[in-house]
Image 1 (cartoon, helix red, strand yellow):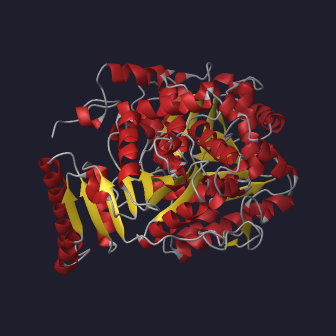
Image 2 (cartoon, rainbow, N blue to C red):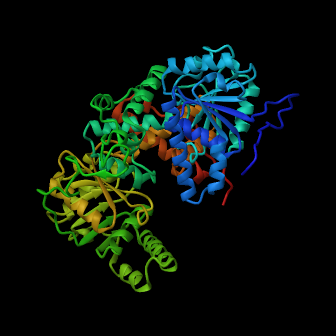
Length: 609
């Protein structure tokens, strides 16, 4: 990697372009040291400033630890690490940054402190030097106007840890000169980062979308709607997120999260950004998350990632005082994709399953689909032929509801229409034996409405499997105000028998996953609707900055815009929060028949298969 390198933006058409040979960084905390490492890794000379010698030493220790870790993992040779550290000059005087071509401030998230640093840099740096702020939530405009060069001030928001995370949010203000943002974008790309250019708005892209979701999860926990373990498991197993929301809040720091939300709320006045009271309470009590050793979870020691049991840790997923009913025979009403997947899951787990369809052709189609799925499992080595044959032998098909009379559990998986579901439950109430559990797979309708159609409301609950059921691990176990404890316990025990992860919640619109996921998706649509950023940049920000498996617009197109709109309308009707009102753009796309991948057109256009 040796030798010094300069960065010259290309293709700008300008007679002269900025050269970035020497860069400055103010602040050598975790984030500042990470930014210094990024620059030095890319062959740039780095001038790094801190307030005093002790802070400089702490910053040096951050850098040496990080590079040593990279050497240990084979990411860097020792020679390259020594060269990298040799490119860094540390100082306690901002005047020493006078020769830098670009300076990034990475001091604590306090507007007066950042403004003071930028004002002093403005005095010591050449007039053409770009000044950048690594703020994650403050107004870049407010910082820029505190200098004598507001047109040359940008936000350059790296994500933590900076050497690993690819995303850089480049924030332009209304007075940022076009060539400044152009040069900053090209510079960030030269660092092997993914730059997205956005306007100066509270939270930018990633934090504006992420922290609304995290805040909502904190409110759910505060309301005792679900346990911390279930909230986190729901988003990990239901959405494929790398961390659950409460564990992520602990990692970020509850004090930091509160400050970001408070800043966003003061700028946006969006009630969804108003910090959940529990965040302020925990911060005041010193429960800051991993850095203090305790937040929503308890950790082995401060700054440790090891979660240790505490007073809130459940001894078992099944309440000790609840009985568990015996379930050997299961009925499934419905022959669609979800119903067929559920039949396969139960039959694979060794239970006898009766699947009921409206016609012989529907039933035959469902059986053919299950057989095809099991054959794929054989081809992929997931099960052998004897297991496939045994699974198929456990499945009985019928067109008569009466054939479910002796089932211990019957799961309704018909169309997502309340009147249709209520009719099924009323019929099952008459047919099924006393003590049989009746369950609905609804993802958004009130479970209690199905229960109310029966004379056994204590035996009714929601079992929300995720699609495709044979693959997805999560099942939301939804108890109504009338569901008996032993019915809930039986459902949880049965999910464990199926190899699924069960999470318990109450009968509220969206349950856990959809209630957290769809307001976030709706916020992304509103962001696009306001022309704040492109769909590509928003998707890139969330995938790259937050390590999500899909960006919001990719996911909306996969789910279906009509399905997404229906869920968002249900959430809005239930909670009556203005922030949950479906974005008009989503309504318009659905009206226009642009429903996503299934129609070939949604937020993006797709090639026909």
